[in-house]
Length: 103
Image 1 (cartoon, rainbow, N blue to C red):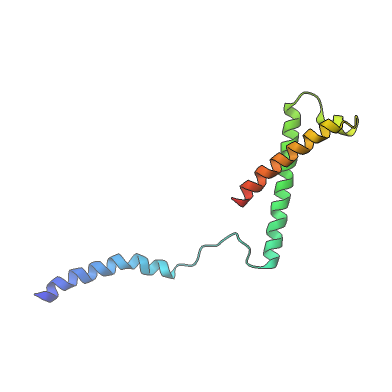
Image 2: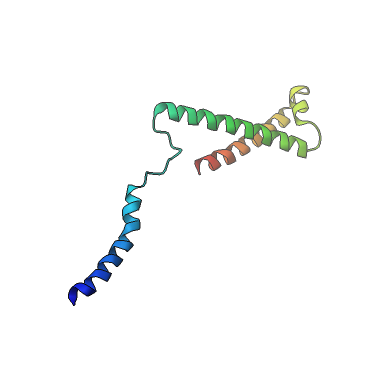
């Protein structure tokens, strides 16, 4: 009679343990973190290019949203105040991009 009660509990324990046993055999998830120096350099270059492009797009969007041409004021009229505003916009966008990349 005792073996009759033991079979269902043993099979239930096996069924409950099966997902855990199968999870141990699964491959580790692939990470985007670099595993070598070359991979780190490639990731750095990719992030740098993306960051520079986003900073330039942010500057152009700011320039379109403000009256006048900020680039013309900086380059042709040598307006220092406009250059400081442009630099502040680029730095602000870069801080946001860096915070987004760090996570």
